[in-house]
Length: 181
Image: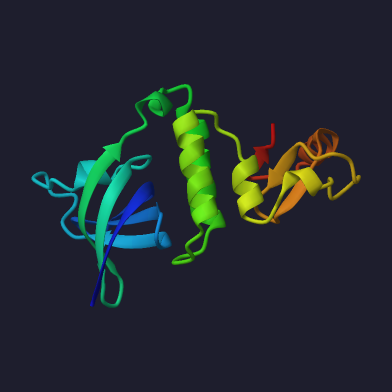
């Protein structure tokens, strides 16, 4: 059994069984981690409030077969980002990080870029895409080879405004496209 102590940003939280939760983190030392929080949904749980998405926490985990959350203490709640007008944009960013990263693959450049975006309150995907190896500076639209305006996460492709509009008009399902500007 190993114990880990690291900074982490809570990406998502799901209910697990009756009182437990499964929590997704992006951590400084371990990359993306999924941990189980036992009895986190009990009304007397002191852990639950610290495990809300968009919290920067000091996290303590143990790993036997899976990660078990032992302790979490909120460092920052990013209150300015929790405004109702900004919340959909922030939730998209957290979902992007959850879907685009692999478990237990630490990347200090990605961690720094992600944390810097949250502190700057300027939600842009360019530094994250660059860290993940999809630098928009060198990309072209997959269809017409023009300068891209969007990144389509499902198929890791770039798209310009014209091609995105044409695809949308043709009823092509573009579930999540990310503006580059």
